[in-house]
Amino acid sequence: MASDGARKQFWKRSNSKVPGSIQHVYGAQHPPFDPLLHGTLLRATPKVPTTPVKAKRGSTFQEFERNTSDAWDAGEDDDELLAMAAESLNTAVVMETANRVLRNHSQQQGCHKPPGALEPEQKLKPSVEPPLVPSGDLRLVKSVSESHTSCPAEELRKLSWSGIPKPVRAITWKLLSGYLPANVDRRPATLQRKQKEYFAFIDHYYDSRTDEVHQDTYRQIHIDIPRMSPEALILQPKVTEIFERILFIWAIRHPASGYVQGINDLVTPFFVVFICEYIDEEDVDTADVSCVPADALRNVEADTYWCMSRLLDGIQDNYTFAQPGIQMKVKILEELVSRIDGQVHRHLDQHEVRYLQFAFRWMNNLLMREVPLRCTIRLWDTYQSEPEGFAHFHLYVCAAFLVRWRKEILGERDFQELLLFLQNLPTAHWGDEDVSLLLAEAYRLKFVFADAPNHYKK
Image (cartoon, rainbow, N blue to C red):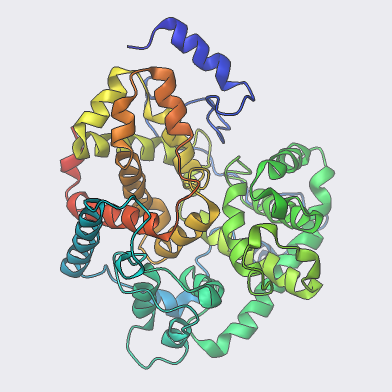
């Protein structure tokens, strides 16, 4: 059991800036939700007006609808993509492939070579579903643009599950998110219209960032962006300004949640993937965006805004008042781990480590602060290929991620050291192979538990 002294030391170190110290719950905008005080997880709340600022003149309903069309609309552009929505991947194939990946890994671990010293022909493929398309292979784009099959979207999702080659990742993400229509002939007009619409928002709303009603939101955004990574990229003035505009416009156009710490991190993967279309450097973390043409930067900014908006549409309850989506997901994760690995669960419980103390950030930032950016981008290839990948499949990834460290967790016998470890997991050198194993285990857990929720309910 954790002593009172350990608890006091925990809270003292939570607020310190010493490297390696226990961190406070990043992104918690509201007090921790207490079901004993609040009764139920969700309450009916009065509808919040969707108009962020007072109109300076009378407006028609058509103007109102046009100005707020992005807030909750699924979008007309993805009608075809939705009509061809991918069904769940074949259970038998997925399970067989996932088990093979895990079995191969177990056999390799039995060798005398240290981890990471596998021969090239022995290395695992970076996924558990279809084989990875070779780098530079344009079949991913062709499958949607030119395929004559009845379900090109399903084929695209299957190919993307395995990881997307860098040369076609940007357009593939735009297709998978529903931002680009499946019909190739409609894409140029759609991009032009959506980019024009985004910058109309900038012209209409961005000057209000200094108004009393919005200045707190803008100030928090301005404070949070320099804390993001990779610093060499984010702290470039042009990039900082782009992030500020994207986050501010999204916040005032979504008053049900507004801006919450953690949303800022979700901009980075989209921006990095889309800017790579204009940067030849291998290490985009240190790329100089000043060499990117102004028109290209505008396109990247608008595309990032719309794709991030579509992601957040599926997980917005993570960021509304009291963040009920995160509270629920952390609770489900706890119940899931108690069934997957009871020993790990009991060990955490015996040392009074609460899941909310470490898993809140996993949900709030989608593991972006736990793994390198390159691993986040690879995870998002699969998340966007999965039905409700960010909202549902992410739970199983988090469960697999926690159990991945069972040996280290069981080896810690102190509340403070346990929490320090869980908040600073050693993933700095992770790559595609590590993500492949994580996804393989997550998919296996999904098929074991997703259709049998009573398995993880006490």
